Length: 78
Image (cartoon, rainbow, N blue to C red):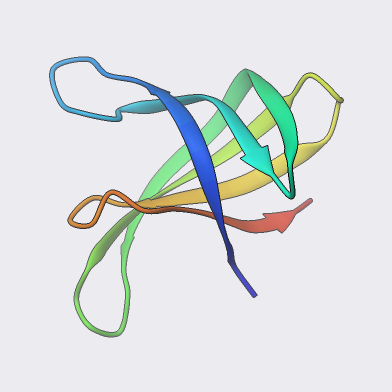
């Protein structure tokens, strides 16, 4: 089950383009590498952007961003 998180993101030509760091359950994680990016629509037709990221702790996380609402979620730890 996805859990809402706070994300510090790089904003290029559009807002919140790439995650730089995130807070999950009170712990700060800096993103070292973005391994994959893909787009998907949920059942209500809202577009989500998914990021497979490697954090400083060496773990790989899958996080997502609803472009319309600006909400970020941790989908799973890989």
